[in-house]
Image 1 (cartoon, chains in turn purple, red):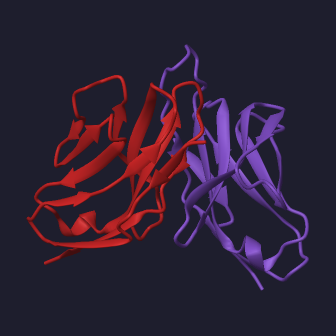
Image 2 (cartoon, chains in turn purple, cyan):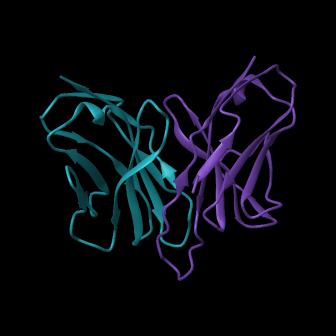
Length: 117
Length: 114
């Protein structure tokens, strides 16, 4: 049981290049999330998904796109990378809420450090 | 909108001593969850402790305990008998009752000295 994995672990891009970050989970979780972590700002939600084929915007969605074609995978894309997107990206997953108010822990991946020059 | 504030960017404590990390939050909801996450140098996010707002009793997990003051919207983390392995960034986080979205504070960097 690998939990939540992220590929790649490190990446350096030039401004204007594109790339896709892959998140995979083997816990059969319904919900998946992408966060970015910047110094002095904590983690901020970029996009999230409440099930296969569905995605929604989080707090800082501009410049990113996502897709959830398979339940176990959640892809984060940068179409034209900018230096402002230099950050550490975390993926997380959890079970669905189920009964209203039922807490479900989010499990985090190890993160991807992305540098845009 | 909910906000989470951690006013201590850095803290230090000597091994075996006790340290308290502060967190305040703002919300109009009456029921919610609060969390403390630990992020060691490995970057892995680790859930340390959680508190349900509808429970008056403060949560405890071994050496970690919280002081939850609902009226004051305060949620501090106390680490007793600090160990070198407690050195990490600590994030306070909020989650509303009917959502799975976590809202994080800016973090407190804790250094434990021998």
